[in-house]
Image (cartoon, rainbow, N blue to C red):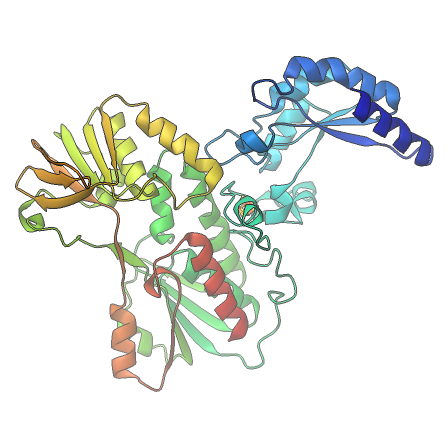
Length: 448
Ligand code: SF4
């Protein structure tokens, strides 16, 4: 305790009387030999004695960084028990941080007595107006942090400037400030996934006349599938805000309308943004035409009866989500991934939760550094670089690995109206992460 107490006493001596000193402490570092909650409960009264006016409770350390910026796989308000315990040992206010992404969670923490204050970090990164909107009862307008960690923690860890997946102006406040368009254009957006919605929202806020066609009854594209992916449900939580903001800005949202080139041209647009996404492609594996291939989306969306054994091809988040869904239903799963690790397409802090949850099923076999050489009517030949082995009795084969851009509308528009400005954004330009898709769409929408 010597170092922190000397620091606090020196700060107290230097800071004018009446100005509070707030002390952030990890309530549990969750690491052998590091600070425990019992340690912190013993330390906190001494900090107060040295002059601290508020204890702000976080958790974790770099070795346990998922406790510092908790991923969406961890519950909201997860640090409440730590703050409550510390609060029982001091006579100054206690604040708590950690996955407080909704005003109702903040209110609950305060009402439950877990803390006297709440500390918001990423929630303000996603929406700096969170407190003002919460105070004014405009909670539906809050752009909610989904705890993806892709734009903030992961960028920070890579030494890159921090951005935000849900708020494309964060970190780019100057370039992405809403500026009125020099000339109001009639713009049609085809596809209501996150990239199409983000483009439409910004274009309308800049004063353009925007119509968005989405073939499904509900906008959201691939992001909607997250609702059915275990632990990833909050990912889809960005969609209602995005759609509502687009409508609020004046976008004519047309869900349930599959717009072909003719329907788009009938709008007499000045420009078209195509955001028709990507589809899972059948891998070029000999015998795949005869094998029992099932679409990954169908597995995630619908109950699937009479499956006893499944082969999942690809260990990205889509493959792991499919494997977990099947395993939950008692299906024996063989998951094949040619790379060295699973779920390398999500934030680092999320990976351990997805991998641990999947490998906890005794009836899931994960085969890394392995490819599928051939498929039969109910079998697969696997190759790990040393040994070939056959897996039989397969009821379904679920490819998840390869995405191909869906460009039919864009191709038809270019063919029929070569003079028209047609832009591709999101996965139909190049399948990538949602962060990249949304940010590319925003950059385009600020330029037009
Ligand atoms: S990048 Fe993701 S985790 Fe970070 S503040 Fe934005 S929504 Fe939250």
